[in-house]
Length: 311
Image 1 (cartoon, rainbow, N blue to C red):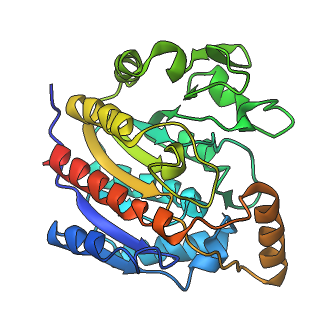
Image 2 (spheres, rainbow, N blue to C red):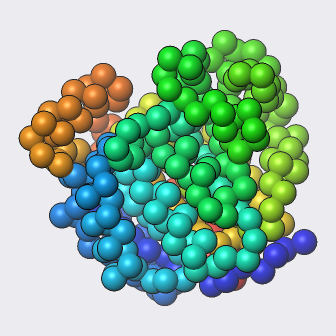
């Protein structure tokens, strides 16, 4: 049964120019009562990873320029996924009425440790420990980041105490399940998509839910990002969202995963380190223009779905 959500305001957070070529998305977001927040001056210092001053500057910008109520925030590249804890904090503050489950769709677990700031691969640990968050449920991982998690600095304590559940689309070894520590979870592929939708709905035990989507969870036919792509189809993502949002109260959401040409900042040393890290972790070849254009269509479909389900 539908738990009525508050009105959801679309917000285009411009950190990297992702919406310059997405004019129809901008029009639809504004027509739905949305807002635009200019923050491209903060983007280079925030991109890939951020120190506290850059995060504080974004927090201040959001407090002054973004609507205070429940929002659907588009933030551009997945290099900015570590902005999500700030957005989750705002959503809880605006709509607090009990514990919240963070539903996280991603090709990567984003669960490692990162000192003195946040990394786009480290934010899940921060989100899971926010006041009011019951747990994070991560869906769709296909990357090998889940292999040998201990030397990579993963937050395995969150797995063990049930505050983080990971359901890969396909396990790195091709098996039917993923074992992390003492916990084993089935893969989407082993269960079948229809059965997994039922499982996912059962694992969200709170009335309230916050959704965060990195479009690199999608297969290459459905998105083009700055990272490697997963195996989830857009239609399957929509099926999972529809089921969850039909049964729970949505307090907010964010979407990352557009491809944008990176500009790194935060000081000369930080910019050099970020560029070196990107060369090691990200594809070297940019997607063709025609391939990148699919992102706007995906954003528009997700915009309509969220707005309709929250109505």
